[in-house]
Image (cartoon, rainbow, N blue to C red; front, side, top):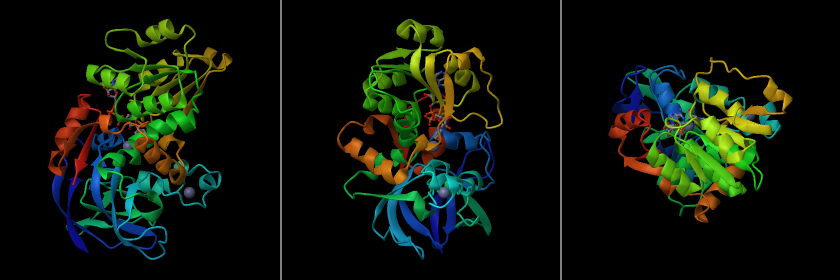
Length: 366
Ligand SMILES: NC(=O)c1ccc[n+]([C@@H]2O[C@H](COP(=O)([O-])OP(=O)(O)OC[C@H]3O[C@@H](n4cnc5c(N)ncnc54)[C@H](O)[C@@H]3O)[C@@H](O)[C@H]2O)c1
Ligand SMILES: [Zn+2]
Ligand SMILES: [Zn+2]
């Protein structure tokens, strides 16, 4: 057991406390990593505010990259010194979803993403003798983390971990939603509602897929500019204009694809009126999971469909190396997404800024 600094959430709607906690050795099938960098995702924000629930105390953070320090028994694909990105699915390989090649829906994520524990239902962190949960089985707002080894994907040592950490959640969620979930076709039209780290990654995915028209809907002017820099062809300020009407003006029939990347019910419903007959609306944002969506049935008669996207329908062993490669080729821009680099003790301020809609991604660099 060793001692590390971590940001610990004790109460919903209260700031996290940076304090010393203890961390165990990795058990069977797990690895201990030194966290080099971690992005801040809106899903952390939703847990902070009790919209997504977790047992507390907990260490949040699930967009991390680091260096392997130790591997537990039975881990053969990693060794100390390897550089890794932590991903949101442990990809067990034997549950029905993994067998159907949908590891983003792996049944083991009920333990890591809902229970916020390791695969055996226990945790490797303690504070004053109490067990501390790790968000998504990761908990990257800490100097070190023990993670199920299946959720660690090795990357080459020359890729900057303080940039590619974003591939751990937001980038894979967004680019994957366009390339895997929607399978955006060349020449098509897309609208993306919400241009935080996830929405801006969806825009990049649509550009990489060869979409001709990419409309970004976002109230923050700096993020509308960033959207244009990353591939959008049009922007809409939903505070100044009726977004649905404006999308119809630009595309006449509506778009082939729409993506919601905020996590609001009203904008999920709004997508239905933005897509054309045969169009596909993809729900990427995560509202309160108990909320309900209302859709007019006439949309189904025009063969419109709505689909969810979990972790960009990613197959991490295939997609993480592919996205790192796209970054290296300059097609996937990560540097532009990072609007603040911070220390662990600034994590609360950075989430306050996220709450005000400021900045695309903040990254904690350890
Ligand atoms: N499905 C998944 O697997 C998955 C994975 C990661 C994150 N998420 C979810 O994706 C969503 C986005 O995450 P993020 O980290 O990019 O969040 P973020 O807070 O960085 O970005 C949200 C953006 O929406 C904008 N916005 C707010 N109200 C708006 C409105 N009415 N119209 C248009 N834009 C508006 C904000 O200004 C902000 O830029 C969250 O709900 C998060 O929980 C889902
Ligand atoms: Zn996330
Ligand atoms: Zn599985």
